Structure formats: structure tokens, C-alpha cells
Length: 160
Image (cartoon, rainbow, N blue to C red; front, side):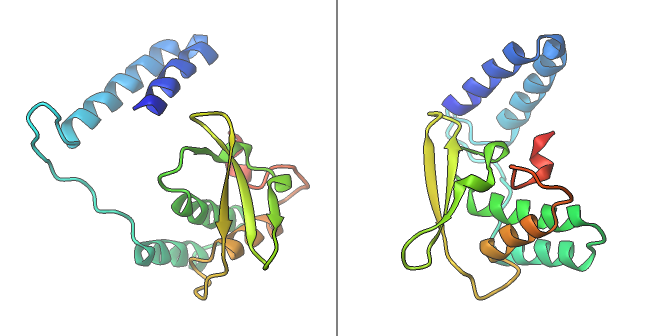
């Protein structure tokens, strides 16, 4: 809840001209969450979407790889894979730069992310996966190899 409150307060302060649109979107999102999530007062559960399993991730990434026509399609697959591995962490992918990638002892690939909640760094160790479709290291390598121009950012889509 604290993260949502911080994001809700940060957006109107950052973009003053878009405040009416932001307020409308936040109200709509709040109503949707209230409608589809557990209601604490009544302790009743409602139907929620099932969690994205590794099998579902594999299907989505395979679809992206099989229909890829441009470099950004491969970067979309990398973004999807990284978001799946970051699920549950309040991390900011927009600040992910190439200097945040390193290889530690024992060939462990280490990624440092900025935490949204505390503005501090948190790390994630990534290991080689036998399945190429869900391997985060391959996803990062594809994102780096398909960049159109040299940039400090790892993923170009998150700059918008």
C-alpha cells in the first residue's frame, strides 16, 4: 500500500498539467482494485487472475520470438522476462543501466536495481537457465545486442 500511496502522490507533483487526467485514472484504478480484490471489511474473496507461471512465460516469450520482425520485438521479450523475474520486488526498470550489470565470483550474474520504496539499491542474482526462452541472461544479451544506438540504458522501451 505504501508504494501505491507514494506513486499516487508523486505523479501529480511531477506533472502538474496532467493532474486532472491522473486523478481520473487513479480513481478508475482504485475502483477496479476495490471491485476485483479481497475486501478486508467483509473478508470475502473474489475471483482473481491466476499467477503467471514459468510455463506461461515460456509461451509468451516463444510467441514474441517467433513473430519478431524488428529489434524492439526482442527487447520486448527481454523486458517481459526481466519483469517476470522481478515480480514481487518494487524495482524501477527505467533506471536499469549497463553499469548495474556485473559478474561475481563463481560466474554469478548480478543486477543492481533501484528500489522504488526506499530509493536504495537492491540486488538480484541471475543464473543460467537451461531453457532459452525463460533464461534471463539470454534476455539481457538479446536486449544489448539489438540496441539500435549506443546508450547507457539497458532497455529502450522503459525510457518513455
